[in-house]
Image 1 (cartoon, rainbow, N blue to C red):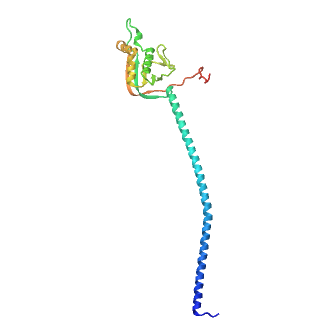
Image 2 (tube, helix red, strand yellow):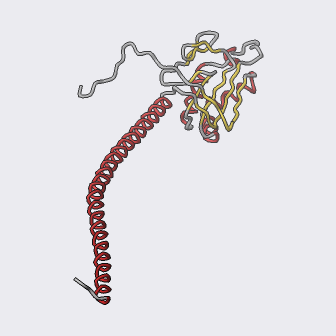
Image 3 (tube, rainbow, N blue to C red):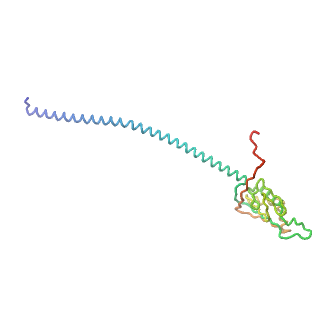
Length: 237
């Protein structure tokens, strides 16, 4: 078939347009295919990420619960330790320090003459007991005599040339330390008759009766008592 020049030009232009349209169609299909592939890969990835986040959330909650249990355990342990310390303090089993007073009692360096009563030249156990009672009455929180902690089972009695305290033999001078308000302790001592009497003996017979106040007095710890016969009462009996 013979085509003139104009027809050949139109045919060429149509071929170019068809080629251009074909290329556009191929690209469009490629893009659509890429979107489909992207969607197909993105959805499982999002699901996996969400599952991982949920697992992390569960593990974090478990960690928070463990930390809470640990904190509660630490609090309980601290409370138990505090209660143990308070119990030991009340029982006199730990050393204490604080403001208070120190009392020194000592026998006279002079000797009785003539018909004088020689007992008035010595410090006797009843003086120490009365002073201890006065200090407790004055609000003392801890007392010791010559380093012996005064506890519920502390004995103070005369053994001849010595005074026995907590099963130990103590010789003069007798130093009594007490922790508490120094003013209250001093006032309580002066309220007791034995304190005034010791003052008279100091003037007349030369014994030593000295009272000092301090910002810091140290009282040593006492010892546990052995129980051979006593035992706690069982509940419900």
